[in-house]
Image (cartoon, rainbow, N blue to C red):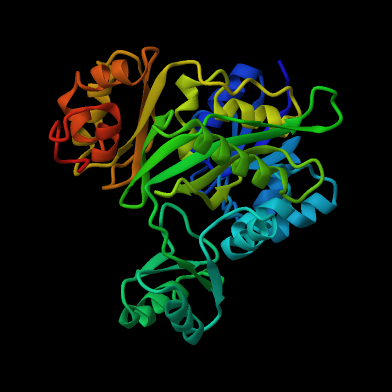
Length: 411
């Protein structure tokens, strides 16, 4: 239908699901990934370039056969992309936005300058600065690498003053760390996320921003494991989370900046919403949109970067729960959870096509939808003991499921 070719830096599961959306839009897609055509996205995309998405020569090779470039991972070569952008290659989101988000400390500074609330933080260019942060913020103290982190990687918690040196050394010894900053410990009650898409306005001239519903996210070993929509929170709290996410995305640098962004936040016992961080691409917290919303995050990302009309973002079911299928001890055990979900009413399954199983690796996800809200969602989840065993206790409490139901794997 569209006929253009979209180049994507990265060929993982996000690129795979982007390619599937591209087929619906008639958009050709070419991925750049070390595994090339054998990558999860490469086996679905129309074309693939084998190579690193941090290699400028390979990025140029990708650009030569594509009409526009985007990313499925933010840890890319921004210097090379910047030179291409200056030469007239279309890149969305903008390179300026990618640079800002790559450096989490600069990202925090940007959000602070907007006046949006977040945990206190301070740059730590030395161990002495990290120790001073501990004296200022108290313990436990969160130390984070400025660059390269995802799924909780490149974070280190110093529980006491005596832990600071080891935590700091662990971060600074990692390649590409880019420095360290400290963040005051945030005693949140829930983690929230909002997908925000920014594309060409209906008049074809301006830029339009649309937010998806606020969701609750729960982590397992620092990996997004469960997403619940909508969260069990007052409407005013949800509205504030949506406002923060939209303001943050609308402020990103770069003329005509377009794409989808995942904004993560903390909710406190006092009802405050605090900004955490942002990703300039489709996000794990937005996978539920594939079954639960009018337009999925992957399709809207492609619409946005290509300048096509944006799709509606409303929730089209009463409640939904997305569960990541993380690698178990064997491929058979991993697949068993998928097979259990296939028997569940209202469930949509997405297998990522990864060749090997590894403990904790993201292998698949499924989303269970229920027009009847939490009550029907709880009934559907209760139809599988194996699925129940993988649910977090907090989700069970929100849905009114017995705290002991399926206790074990998700506890």
